[in-house]
Image 1 (cartoon, rainbow, N blue to C red):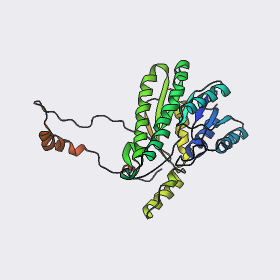
Image 2: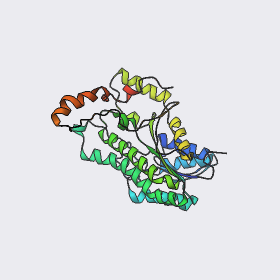
Image 3: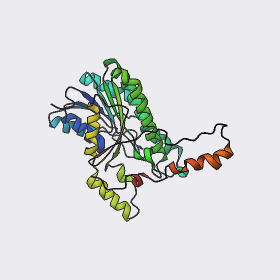
Image 4: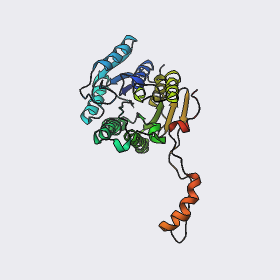
Length: 304
């Protein structure tokens, strides 16, 4: 018995990387799978895409005895997102989980970022998550069962230089998931988020500038694989009692990430002024400030 026997799962960005591994594993766990992928580049600059890569994954699933259908709509297109859901309902007469790792990168320092770079990343990541979730939410609520597995990033949760557009979108996804989980609790609609560490073609676009960067790339390739992230994604698609959480997966490590809560407070009975805050209040809290370190300053040890 698979964890997803009798279920229908939609996986976006499913032709390569994490999405591909999610689609293959979901099928092995008994799901009928809608394999969505635009077939575009990492930068998302070829909107017409290519249906071939998604079909290759479908063919692989079918060759192994599973059931799957290809879809080549873009998550950034609202009509396309609706079409993906309709594809699942028309082809397999159901939909029980959406796994949504589809994404692009357009890294650039913020002071050099163009409006096009900003809009493209927001459209695929944040709007893409909205589009898919909005297209599926009422079906999930009506059947009183459904799971969204969304994808955030430590670039947003912790920070990474050169990724303001990506970080903003990924933090927005974490907030979106939280509200969907809260609003969906009464209808058994779950939503969780994964911040993945894995070697994919998106990670491969990050420039290697020095020996330390090269060693980090080699570690990604050897110890942090897409299939390890897919294991968690499929588990969350199947889990009935987990919602509203943020996880990170790094190799064989799974982390439950904190969510913003007060860490320190100050009070002044007569009220604060800008002067007293600058001279007294902010210095009193300074010991609890977060530093400006990037992801590798938080995850400073080798992956397991």
